[in-house]
Amino acid sequence: MLFTDSGLSGKNKKVKEIVLVGRSNVGKSTLFYQLFGKRVRRGRKPGTTLKPNVIRFKDLIITDLPGFGYIRADRKLNEKIKDFFVRYIETNDRIIAAIQVLDASSFFEIVERWEKRNAIPVDVEMYEFLREFDIEVFVAANKMDKVEDSDCIKKIAEKLGVKLERVYPVSAKFGEIENLKNALKRYFREIGKSDWIGVLR
Image (cartoon, rainbow, N blue to C red; front, side, top):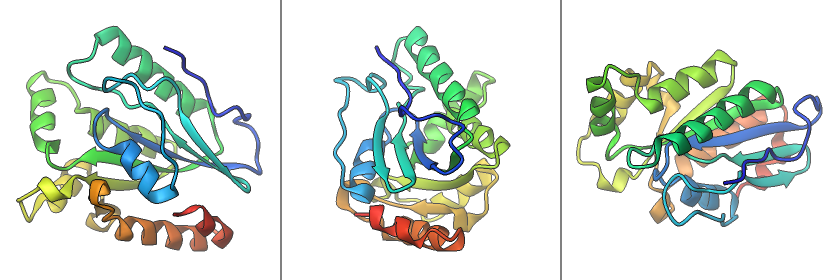
């Protein structure tokens, strides 16, 4: 397995970066395509993506980072991907925002599984880690087409410790992502980067 960064120095003050992060098998690659129109290479199994998928648009980089935390994956592989993820975030101060993708249909089942081991659930740990670096996090609760609980988004927000309006229910498989896309447009305008709106599909 090969891990590489996006090929640009983390100290480049002009270039900024948005990352897509999440566990394996949450629909991250599908959302990446729905948002930005780029299909990405995937490994044959969850958690085996060879390297980050990158879009460069003007002075913006968008990076789809390898997913980790797949419960059936080899432990060493999971640790290797996790170490890469941590190092990537820690050493790239150009990262200003992250789209954290989670599987809303299995979120609580997986959280319970981790908590039974007296461990912090991966999704929770990932969100807290990103916020430590003052990265703006957009939580994309994917696979909402499989969710029956009408309070699901509220419960996810409570578990992550995030405001309800910062969790965006989406269904990437069916292209139902307008709320997230509109949130990104607002964010680009707020930071004076309206020209970045053109990166969206």
